[in-house]
Length: 291
Ligand SMILES: Nc1ncnc2c1ncn2[C@@H]1O[C@H](COP(=O)(O)OP(=O)(O)O)[C@@H](O)[C@H]1O
Ligand SMILES: [Mg+2]
Image 1: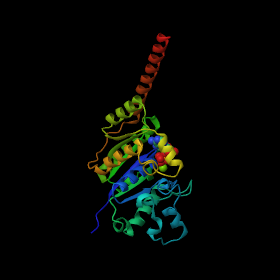
Image 2 (image 1 turned 90 degrees about the vertical axis):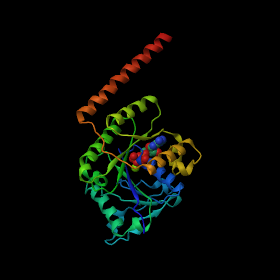
Image 3 (image 1 turned 120 degrees about the horizontal axis):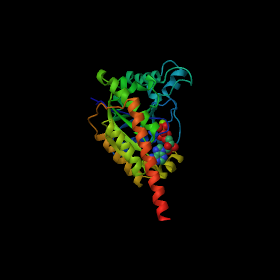
Image 4 (image 1 turned 90 degrees about the horizontal axis):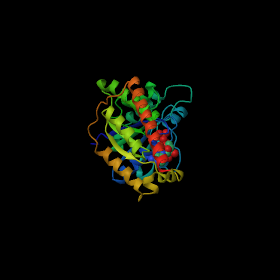
């Protein structure tokens, strides 16, 4: 009898580091001996490239566009350490709904019992989530994933996207939607960035699962078409990703967050903006006093 894999969705605004983070989590989990599938749900279909030496794979929707009957195994490719790589793909720009694409892709694999046959421990969905469009809420709303994590930096737009996701989770929580595991705080290199994201986490009753610094090691690895775990296994950054993967693997109880309203979010960001101005003024005055 095969078990049901633990299903996790990683959300965040475009370019925030979802695919980088997700691929490193997958790589760290296979390294720890688990069976993992990474399921890219960004219409860009580039989630799994650093698991496959920089190579793109055809998406489920690409395959379905070519022929009516697709063997779901044709959409599953092996990557680093035996990770199963799948890309849902998306509609052509300007037509159709990306959410439908995700449902179609997940349904195809479910109907053909791929998750059970591969005897997976983890399925990790990498989902673009900066849009208020309901389509991207699919993995939350349909309960495809049980635990949702969001990648966010301390930048306002990333926090705005995270807050929108929290609102979606809150909305669907009463009808069997996914719950929130926490925030993966990416590109956090200063105390100040840490203070901002920590304050947002506190305001929304959300744990921060891991702080991930912005690092050149990640850039170098990406340029060679690899995850940090593969390209620089001895690096400090690889250990950060291993710790993150461990937290996610061990994570059990997700919750309903307490998102901020639009007005509260505006007031919150304005108060931080004032704080920044005050800090800069104090810095300038200190520098003048020294001179
Ligand atoms: N912690 C980090 N350190 C350095 N570069 C990072 C880090 N996280 C993400 N990046 C870089 O940011 C860019 C966007 O990341 P990506 O994972 O593709 O974002 P997303 O999937 O959210 O669109 C990539 O070039 C990636 O290498
Ligand atoms: Mg991506």
